[in-house]
Length: 159
Image 1: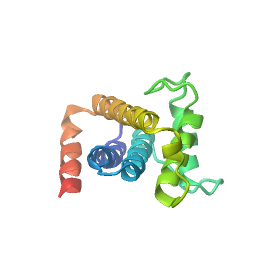
Image 2: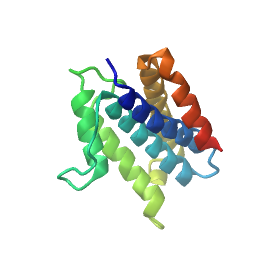
Image 3: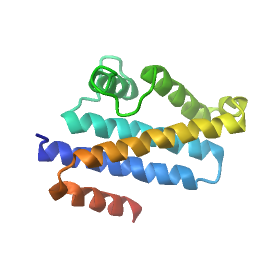
Image 4: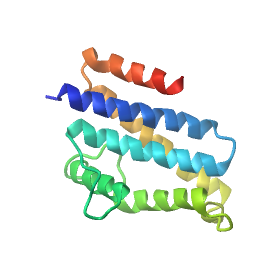
């Protein structure tokens, strides 16, 4: 049984993921698409983790992104039942994070352009698919009586 607190926390973060997903798709340049796409994936993972219980971002590694990856992987491994089938989840998420960091911080290095524009858009499609599957997965687990929370959070973010 899901606790109402877990549901609310998960839906709050999930609505951020959906908002970022839409902003990524609407962005005018590739750097913004990559950055927002990555953060949509990150928040989708956080939402999935919060659905299972509380979570402490203060990991011994010092990296909230790594802490989320490790917790998500422990909850949604191939043995525990992946939400999205990814052969090497950690490697995929690290590569998406590296791509995002390049898009956000590198002025002259263009890792995402080195991939080639078509390949970069394929990676973005993979990110979008990842978030979409999390949206469906989490919404399917939420009792009907709590679904209005998601609609409220999403509306709040769009204002």
